[in-house]
Amino acid sequence: MGLWNSVTDALDEFRVESVIEILSLALLIYLVLLIVKGTTAMSLLRGMLIIVIGAFILVEALNLTVLSWLLSNSFPALLIALPIIFQQEIRRFLERIGRTGRWHWPAGRANLESVVDGIADASMTLGEQHRGAIIVIERETGLEDYIDTGTKLEALCSTPLLMSIFYPNAALHDGAVIVRADRVVAAGATLPLSERTDNLQGTRHRAALGLSERTDAVIVVVSEETGAVSIAANGRAISNLDGPRLRGILRSLILPSSDLDRPTGPRLPRLSRRDN
Image 1: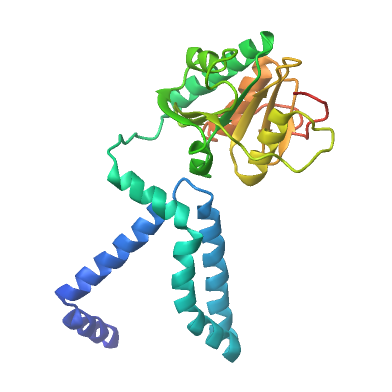
Image 2 (image 1 turned 60 degrees about the vertical axis):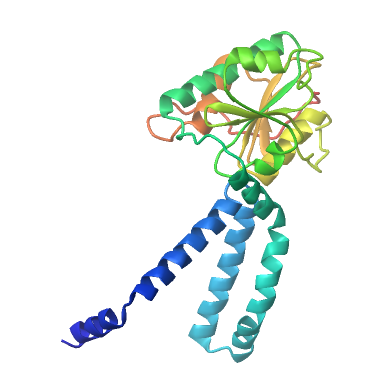
């Protein structure tokens, strides 16, 4: 009965202003998520939330006076710091609002399989012709920061498109192609270089490994010097792949985890040869 009375009292105090306030807060949270979506700032925001929530749990559980005072007095400074920390994401979000664009549904499994086949076929053909290439496949971590360094395309990913981008002396061949779902969203993009130098001298492989150390992207690299095809992911790489092996690893990393034929053998050891 007491619970029912509490619910009744809460409903009596529930006004139109309360609905507007709840909707405003929900919209604010949604806008924040839109701002950081598709960028590495999402990981930063997640880390900040974990620290703040953990601190509040400690304060409530152990009654830590100094930490409680620090948390209560740090929020004004945090409100000032947030726009500074996320200034690039806020600017990008406002630019998106100011320009019209197309919205795409997430690619289905059939489309992703077509992307895997297109990337695998293009990579092996480029390797046979000794045409260097680097193809980035976006996964959970957004790559907007790197997309902005290249030329935006928004074209359906296919073998002919990739072959034309990496044609010798083409305008966009000297950079990375970034694939999101079933589309090539940018070409000629610049990637961060890995600081590791152990048996890893080629610029393309260092760039692929550098991006894989910072994000969960999958990167396919074709060596211009040797024609070897490699894959980098999760800070590790495997080289000298043939067509079936390349296709199998791409399927295991990109397609949904259900009913996949996982590739056999070692899983993404570090590059051990000098390719470029």
